[in-house]
Length: 120
Image (cartoon, rainbow, N blue to C red; front, side):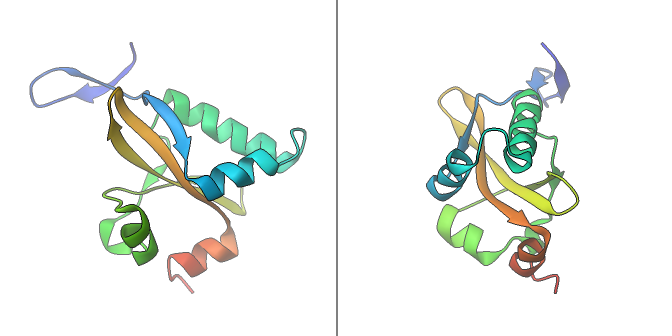
């Protein structure tokens, strides 16, 4: 098993999540994409990467969390995965019965990402 590091107790910590989930709106968006479209391909590649390494995205500082994610989903951590130069996949990690799951919250174009995170 591939490991990221050792926990405080010395146990190995896996980079693989127990599963990948998406909130309903995002799951519906992904399901609606044409299977051979560029957008679907980059989303599928990102999901495949996250299946192997849940830490593949960039950790977002807590002070930069959009309030909507905290209120709507109660996020305690938040990650950004760049799909390409113009699209971002936002996800969080949550404990479930089998370990830690990746939960995809949103897929945003760069303009909406900047707006959501109040960069502009």
